[in-house]
Image (cartoon, rainbow, N blue to C red; front, top):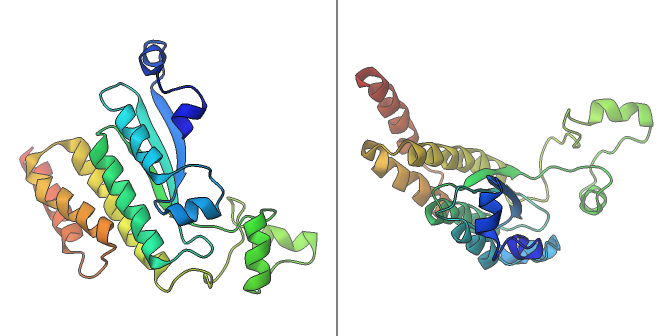
Length: 212
C-alpha cells in the first residue's frame, strides 16, 4: 500500500516529529475490481489500514476518489461511498476529495477506449480542441454512456452529503449526531430518495447560528 511503499509504516513517529502533517493518497475506488482494472496495485483493506495507522497522530490522511469509471457498476459505486464513510469513521482527521465523477482526459488509455467504444465526438483539427475541452483539460461530453444509469446524479447528491457529514464530524456538536449518522447511512447504501436530512441540516445550521 502507499504507506508501506514509501517507508511510512514503522516511521510514523519520526515523520510526525520531523513536521509531516499531511499524507495524500489516491484511493480512487472502494471496489477491488475497479482498483485492479485501474492497475492501482493496492487493495481496499490497505486503504482502510492506512487511515487507522495514522489515527492518533497529527498527520492528516487525505484521499481522492472517483466514480463512473469505465465498466463500473452500481455496486462498485456503492462500495466507494461506503469506503469513504468508513474512512471518516476510522480516523477523525481523514480528509476526502470527492468522490468526483470520472472525466475523460485525452491521451490516456481509457480515453481512447471510451472514444472508440462509445463514439465520442473527438475533434479532428487541432484548432477545435480549445472548445472541446474544459478549463481542467477533460473532454466535455453531454452524457456518460459508459456509466450506469443515474450515476452522475447519484454522485452529485452523495458527495454533497459526505462533505456535510465531514463538516458535522469536525463541528462536534451532539445536536448534529443524528444527521451525521443519516448522511453516512445514505452514502453507505447509495440511497438518493427523499434526502430530508439535507434540508434538516440547513434548518439546524440556521438555528445554531441564531443561538450561538
